[in-house]
Length: 130
Image (cartoon, rainbow, N blue to C red; front, side, top):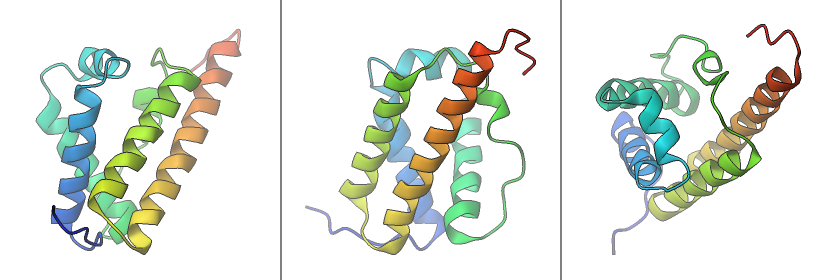
């Protein structure tokens, strides 16, 4: 069994992102949504996710953009966010230990909560201006 390590480098971020999206791509609930949107652009998406988490966790500012907008019109609800969060937490806990690992889980939870709230608000807005 591989020893858990801390999240300290871009290689650790890549390991996390690759493992997590491997789980996503094999999940009956989430895979269809991701595959419909990403299609054959997985390498580009993964590269963007490396930069995002490198910025968030390592404070190496390689990502710029608005992470919510690409998700604003996804056909998702609480069940999807719960599954996403469960897979993220499982992935982190299987591979990593330490403060950055716990921070990753905490930050992912906050993002999932915010995205879920904003998507629900958008669906309930009669103007739906997103």
